[in-house]
Image (tube, rainbow, N blue to C red; front, top):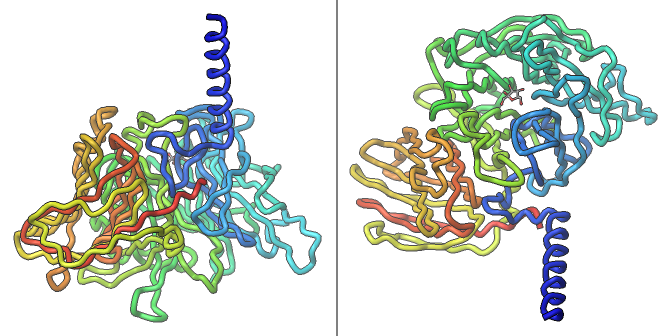
Length: 509
Ligand code: FRU
C-alpha cells in the first residue's frame, strides 16, 4: 500500500514538473491558442501600439494588463520580430505609474535628434526611438505624452516635461505621429473621441505642438460613436505610377459595419495642415466587414526601398472582448496586411493583402482543380491553414468553404444571387459567451468575368478572408470544438476552378 502511495506521489510530482516546464516555456498550445498570430504568453491585450521598424526589427507594442486577463492597469507590452512572423517577447516597455495609465499611441524614429532626447555617441547615427502615447487618468483627464529609448526599444524613459499636449479633456487620445517631408515637421493625428473629431498638430521637436486643423462630421460620426485610434498616411494607387492619395483611418466604437467596434477610412488630400475629404460627408468606407478587426494602425519608418504600408488590427470587438473563452491570454492581433489604393467605379478604395512574409510559413500543400461543388467533399484538414481558391459563380450559385470540427462549423461563402461574400459563425463552436458573438457577416462583391477569388487564413480560432485580391476583407474569431478543422467544399451551380490549401507552420515553436 505504502509503495503504491509513493508511486502515485512520484507520478504527481513528475506531472507537475512537466506542466511547469511547459508553462515556463510558454507552450502556446492551449485551446484556441493562435499558431501564427501574435498573442502575449499570458494576460489581457488590446490595441496594437507604436508599430515601428528600426535597425532591422519590427516593434509591436500593445495595450497590455501585466496583472491579469481582463482590461486594467494599461501599459505597453512589447515584442520584436525580424520577419513580421516570429515574435520575441520583451519586458513591458511603458508601465502605468502614479495613477497614469499608458493608453494607445505610436512610435517614430527621430532620425536627426530633433527632440534633443537622443543620446547617441555615434556621430554618423544620431537617432533614437520616441513613443507618443496618451496618459490616462481614470475619470479625469487624457493628455499626450512622449518617452524615449536609446537602446533599440529595450528600455524607455518618460519625458520629464510630460504631458506635451494637455487641453483639459477626458476623451482626447490615441496620437499617431509621422514626419511630413513637404512641410518639414512632425504631424500628429489624435482624436476628440466623444466629439467624433480628428485633430492635427504640428511640431519641429516632438515636444512643442501647435494645432493645425480639425476634421469631423463625416463618415460614421453619430453622437453615440467614439472615434478612436486614427492614422494618416499617403498611399500609391495601383496601376497609376506617381499618383498618390492620403488615407485617414478612424476606428469607431460602436458603429462598426458588423456591429460594435470596427474601422472606417476617408480618402483625400493632406497639405501638412488640413485633411480634405474627396467624398461627400455621408460616404462611409469600412476597413473590414467582419466583426473582429479594430484599432487598426500602420507601421512607421518602413524603409523606402521596401515602401510598403503595413497594417495590423486588434482581432476583437469591445462588445465581447472581455468574455472571450481563452486562458491565460485574451485576444490576438491580425496578420500584418499590406495596404494599397485601387481605382474602382465608385472611387478610390483600400485593398488589403496578406504580407508576403506569410508565404515563408507554408508547408505541405493540397492542390485541386475543376471540382463540381454539388457533391460536398473534404479537401484537407489542419490547425493553421492558408486557402487560395477561384470559383466560377453563375447567377444562382453558392460556393461554400465549410470549416468543421465535431459539432461546430464555420461557413465562408459566396452567394451569387445576393452578390455577397460572407462568414457565418452562428454554429462555430463556443458562441454563447455573449449574445453579440454568433452571427453572419457579409459584404457585397462582384464577380469578375463570372469568377470570384478567395484568399483565407485560418488559425485555430480565427478566420481572415480576402475577396478578389483584397478588394474586401472579413475578419472573425471563432472558438471551434477542436484545434483541427476540416476544410470541405460544397455549393450549387458553381465550380471550384483551382484550389490550394497549405498547412502553415507555427511561429511559436
Ligand atoms: C481602443 C481604446 C483606445 C484607448 C485604449 C485603452 O480600443 O479604447 O481608444 O487608448 O483602447 O486601452
